[in-house]
Image (spheres, rainbow, N blue to C red):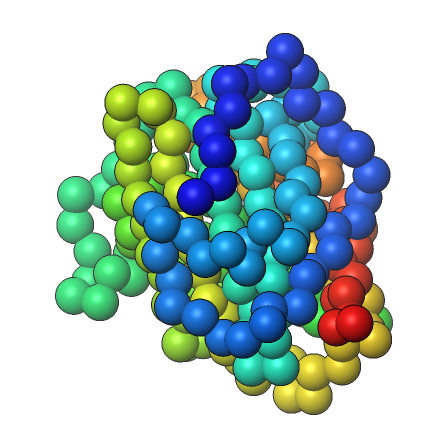
Length: 224
């Protein structure tokens, strides 16, 4: 079990890269009792808004990434001040407009040569989700087959989400030597101004996460 540390006095953005560590084998998600494999993944943390301002350690987000040839794994550990959730979803947990409530998000761009094309994944503290194909055309459901596990610890004001995304929903030909572009986000709050947090600031005048030019980079660490 990974230890839960107290909020730091600050959590400024450090660097623009994250390394996805290789999973020794594919594994079952368990947000409350995480696999020891997650320890191999060096996390990135953020708690500032989309402009890189107004840091709030009580809303810090930590993200770790693992990969196998079949699956990309994401783990979020999110501190929160209050919860704002949808009470209903489709039978399998999908919820349209999930971003209108509290969420953690990942925008993944396996092919940076097509800057207007990327994938969007969102998960809420109560386990609802949505996955989308972003392109210059109409918004489309990705139907990725993503799996998730979510654990909410109200006493510690923390929620954790683990996602397993099939690699073939992200790219037709996965090459671990490739460098992907990506960004991570959080939204929290019951009314505007809500807290729109970003790992890599988008620096738009109003909250906007759809800024591919601001995406960071992800390298895939090779097995020894």
